[in-house]
Length: 132
Image 1 (tube, rainbow, N blue to C red):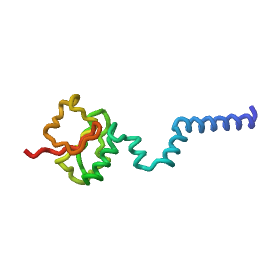
Image 2: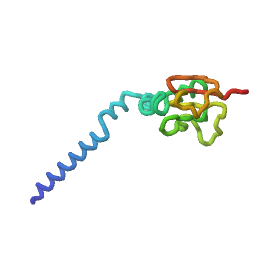
Image 3: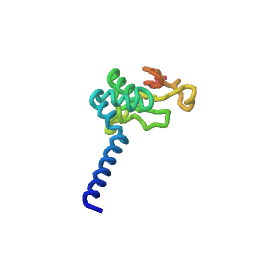
Image 4: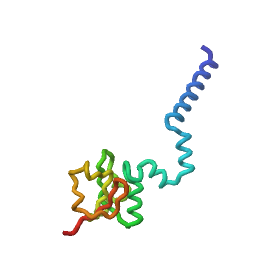
C-alpha cells in the first residue's frame, strides 16, 4: 500500500464524514432559519404558540398582562414551560395559572370551575383563582 493511496482513503473518509454531518444536522435548513427568522419566530416554531409548550402564548401573557412567576401546568406529556416566564429566585404569583394543552372533557382531574378564565386561545388558558 502506498502513501498516496492512504492519503486518498483518509481524504475520502473526511469528505464522507463532513457530508454525513451536514445531512444529519440539516445544516442548510438551520442556516436558512437563522438568517430569515428572528429569535421569537424560531422559538415559536420550536416550542409552539400553544402546542406543545406554549411559548407564544406565554410571551403574549407576559407582554399583555405584565405577569411574571405564574405557575404553568402542561396537561400533555411535555416538559413544563415555567422557564419561559419565571424567575426561580422570586416567589410565584399564586393567583394565576397558565394551563397548556387543557381540554375540559379529557382532563377531569383539574376543575376549571374554581378559576376565572382571563384569556383562552386554542387549548391554552390564563386563569385566575376566584375569590369566594
